[in-house]
Length: 442
Image (cartoon, rainbow, N blue to C red; front, side, top):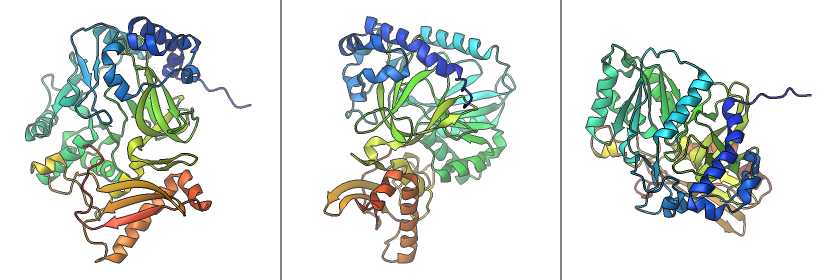
């Protein structure tokens, strides 16, 4: 008989807090009172959540006042990125002091009295998402904007000790910010290792393998490629034991569901669905929030005592077919494209401003499509190169084969499709200037 696995404190809290979370939401938020009916009373744990409807981002934006449990209190909180919202419409998620107090009490109960850090934690926040009031002890909060001032501020904060004599030892910032900051320092022959950082944690989208290797080498620091949502206060930390991401505190209930039939998954790749928990989120509960992010479920991790997940790209930018599953995950394409010097790039805002060299940080120029013909399904990946593939056919062919091999290795559904002769992956390489629209944000 296999030994019984002891769940983590966060995993236990997920099921303990769900009934209270749902009762609070139905009692105080008109939207949930209308949509959850009496079904919420049958939810005893995460496995019962499929009894309830999903909440998409567009629905949350449309009904955000009805999602509030605190009336029309003054807004202090974060603004979502609006990646998959309608143009010009944002989701404003308030944060309250009561939520912060609940988290502080939970951390004290879980970890006890934390020893003083040997340095500061620098948290760099995109001003578009809002700067949270009342930064926690031993944490500096700096704004991120696409300006030279933002770059110089980071360099200044890292270059010298703070007022108490301690230096910044850890930094948390967006993946797009850390790539631009690294390229900017390199262009000025500044060695980032002299800052003495021990660890760098990312948020927003995932770093490509090329950039993770480069940032690690430049700063001589541990780089943890984390997962976060601006709407949810909890990040998911990259685990050095299993390589997947695990939620930190405050706990959230999460599910992974099939992207088309929306059935719960216990393995494989699906859409991440999260539920925030009371009392750590009170003002705007998010119940079965459809993130639109494809993630891969990991194995049970003995170190974290929980199952982890890994970001695989946006659902709307990936190729998914009913009856087959996820054929091409967007992040798999970008990992290869951004790691090759042969591929063309959309200009990064910092490149447009002339602050970092061109072609350093921009997202690769790609286009994904899925068609059905007589030969079956045809998942197609178009990639723009820095040169006309007809001029250097051998180099272009080698890159195309490497990309196809990576996509086939990463997607069992794609391998089954080709093995059963129900379709075939097509990789098309384009000359410079062919692809115009950027499909990822910075």
